Length: 48
Image (cartoon, rainbow, N blue to C red; front, side, top):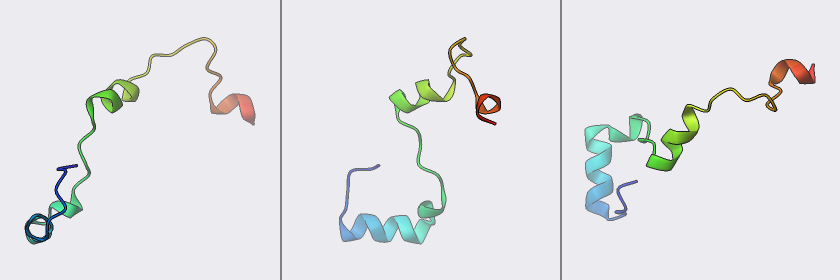
């Protein structure tokens, strides 16, 4: 996500423990997390 694959960058990420945190969502992914309810979305109850 930082667009750097140098040895120094990777070493720094590992030393600081940043590999243990989730990656931040990109702007277009944030929009998908709050989808509104819609009449043609059936949901899990429909398939059981």
